Image 1 (cartoon, rainbow, N blue to C red):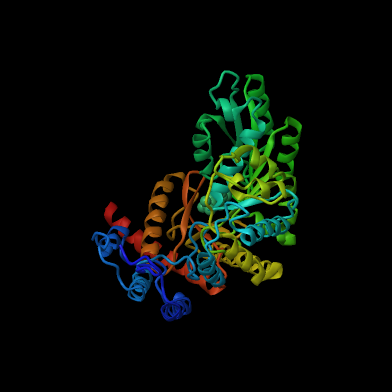
Image 2 (cartoon, helix red, strand yellow):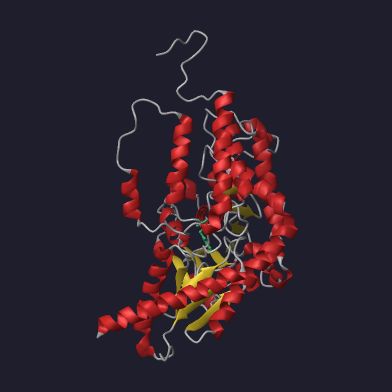
Length: 502
Ligand SMILES: *Cc1c(COP(=O)(O)O)cnc(C)c1O
């Protein structure tokens, strides 16, 4: 113990002088990193086990270490051993370049350290989160009166909506009796076969089980077939089941396809089902006139998931759930323990965000989103989204024109394609296994090279390459480089695989 009378020993606090000194140094290092980013390898050459070994497995130190020293060391540790999704040639999955302002916002948010679980604990941070939610709703043309909350990402936004829908549509007291009570009915949800894997977690966590999810077929364009949806709902009703939810997707994770949202909304109205839209990736495209018709149905949903850490370029983690009626979140998530003294704020119409979702203590993730939205403005987003889409389209065109590339799909800012060796017939079913292996191998080699990072999708059972541009640093030249790299690694792998086969 230290001398507690009027002062304390300080293993953690920093004097203003030291905070300033090591803080400035860190900001300098981050500025250098951002400046150098495009010349660094996209991914480290070492594989994850080797990188884990570099960290070693020493125990936590008994005696504290100088803060400045720790920061200096960790900057090089991270710079040398990370995959950089802000790199102009990072086009894998749906992970965007992050706004540098967001990094500064996170530092400020951590310094203030608001607990955005309750308005009394975080009055301004709560107001900022509410305003952020309102702006996100405006951005995707969703009613702004409802409210919603920020969560860690698309998965949590979708799962939270699933829980709210479950509570809203259950005809018995599902809170008290659960899904197995005497009066429980069998709830069923509907979505397409192209749904993101969050639905598996939602079905499992909610106690409904994986069999409660009906995966409706998609058409040639990859969109949910609404006639099949209607048939399945009618069959389930006839079998005594209780349909409660339909999930449409605005920008599927693999190909970027937008479901026929307005038609799905009509069916939901007809059968009194909750309509949720997973717009984690694609919902924001609605700000562009060229996509506003396809995304018009967003305004008709009961809830929409949208990911600021995807196509709004906020740093991880930031997902958002927009609700037509936030009261449905309170119904699903609010409890009032005696040791909470927050009801006065609720009575004043203030939001206590702990009542809106599964989290209790909550960080101030709204700040980076709120500031980033203002920095770019709606106009800035229109430009960035258009440029991302143009870059993806450019790659599609390159693949169409190159004799050794096959262009597969282009939706929103996702292009899929694959490498096909000269003189090989890509349409011949007998060549598919070879082409799948070849493209899978070349993808690993390409990503390991550090020169670019893309991912894959499955299309009609075939392994194809996938580039998703949610990156304000990516130019048309980068797309040309990616096409060339795929051809280069494709040729090399083809040579090796042919030699192995002989
Ligand atoms: C990315 C994505 C998710 C999951 O979002 P996370 O932020 O990774 O949790 C869900 N649905 C769709 C359509 C997505 O693109």
